[in-house]
Image (cartoon, rainbow over all chains, first blue to last red; front, top):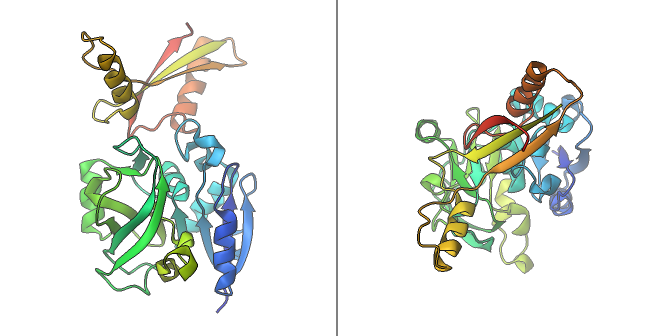
Length: 214
Length: 81
């Protein structure tokens, strides 16, 4: 079945075209969602918030994007239980919007990390990873300066108890709590991750594990 | 009127920027330095002339507008420098 997938665009989003091509490559129908506009949540089957440096990463990464009209609709979309995937800056935006708990801080090393990482699939109960096996190790690239997941210890415990930690790093590249590379909300319809599945789709990209996600 | 907000990383947060500056200062011979933490200073000019109302608006920007993130930051509303 072909899905209609909304792809948000903020000032400074730069992975929008990659995500659009990914969606098209598997015969789904992509449509851009401009940050200044709200949208009708019934018009879309899924929303993807791609990476980039929305609004210049000013104030805090994702903070300005999180308070835009399009995110009001994304919140509504999330509350209806519809699937949302936030990649890299998209993950940061979901956290700043309060749709996912916690926040992403500057990497411990202070360095921008651009490299391939091995990730463990901790649970495959989300729509975005149900093609992978639990405990499977997959490879995806990361590209971020602020990917260190942080939350208070009570939140981390809750995330672990509710199986909301869906992806963890095998070798922690940024100092993230509990090696977290991606988390979901309680209902598991909203998923965020720092690595880039859209950069690992075809052999010429260096790997194809991104295809597990859609 | 004009108000300022000082936003600092909470004490439990490792302030990487402050740490980098601290290391640089120490390596430049400032041996008396024990810690450096870096935050933001925001100046806000508002239409109102009423100080109480101005403070209410700024609080709202902080809490609802996303001007600060309570998970990692603390703030103090001040008169402008």
